[in-house]
Amino acid sequence: MVPTLKKPKTKSQRPKIPHKIKEIFKNLNFWFAVLLVDIFILNFNGYAQSPDYIRVSILKDVSSFRLKIKGLYEVVDLKNNKIFYQGKNLNTTVSVSKEGIALGPIKIDAVKVLIKSDDPYLVMVNGRILRGNIILLKTNNLRLSVINHIKLEDYVKGVLYHEVSHYWPLEALKAQAVVVRTYALYQRQENRQKDYDVTSDIYSQVYGGKTSERYRTNIAVDETEGIILTHQGRIFPTYYHATCGGYTEDASVLWDVDIPPLKGVVCNFCKDSPHFSWQEVISIK
Image (cartoon, rainbow, N blue to C red; front, side, top):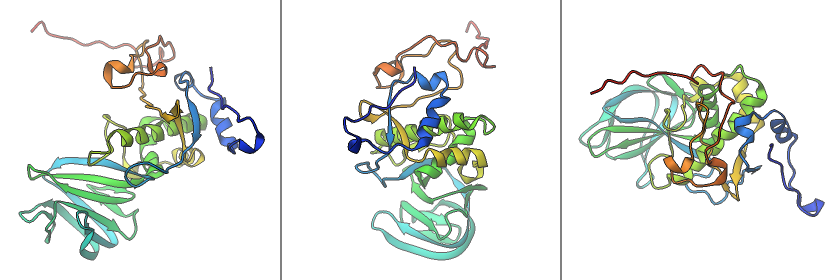
C-alpha cells in the first residue's frame, strides 16, 4: 500500500504539490511504503531553536581537537552574545583553559562560545570539512564538546552518503532523504532542552559534514527539499535500519512511541541482506 494525499474539497484549497513528490511515490520500497503516514511541505514556523537549523554533536567530552578556518572568523560568547575575538585564518589546537576555552594562544573566558566563519565551507574539525558554524561547550569535568550548528538541508546532505549507497537508484535516495530529514526534526523536537539535537554517529544518524557529500545524494536532497513525513499531523519518528532479521520490533518496547505504523510486523523484504543471518559465540560464564 502506498500512502496517498487527501485532496481538499475545493480546488482553491488544494496545496500545490510538486511533481517530484509523485516521483518519490512511484518507486517506494516496502520498508517505506508500509508507513501509513501523510506527507506535506515543511512549514518551519513554530519550531524551537533556529527554525531551519540542526545542532549536531560531533565531538563529546574530548580534551582537545584540531580546528582550522580559512578566512575571517569571530568568536562569540553565547551567554551574552558578546564578540570575544575576531581574526583571520586559524590553524590550532582547541583545549580547555583555567579561564574557559583556549584556541591555541587565544584564551576565551567563557564556557559556551560560537565560532562563526566568513566562509562556512572552510571550517575543519580534526581534518573534516563542515558547513555551518561551530559551538564549543566546556563541560563540568573540564572537557570539551563540539556542536555543529548547521542548516537542516546541509545536514541531510552530510548524512545520506553514510546511510545508503550513493549508487542506488535516485528515487531510493530521495526516499531516504525524506526519512533522514524527518528523523532529524523529530529528534530536535524531543531534545529541545539539550545542548544538541542529534549525534553524528549510529546512535542518531551517521554524519560526516561536507566531506561526506556526493553529487547524487546532494541531488536527492535538493529534489526533496522541505518534504517530511507526518502521522496525524505530527512529525513521524522515522526510525530505520539496514536489516530487520525477518520481524520488526514494536517501537514502544524501545522508546516512548506507541503508534500503529510502528508496531512489529513480519518482513521478508531484507531476507537477501548479508546481515539477515548471523551468529555469536557466548561463553557459559
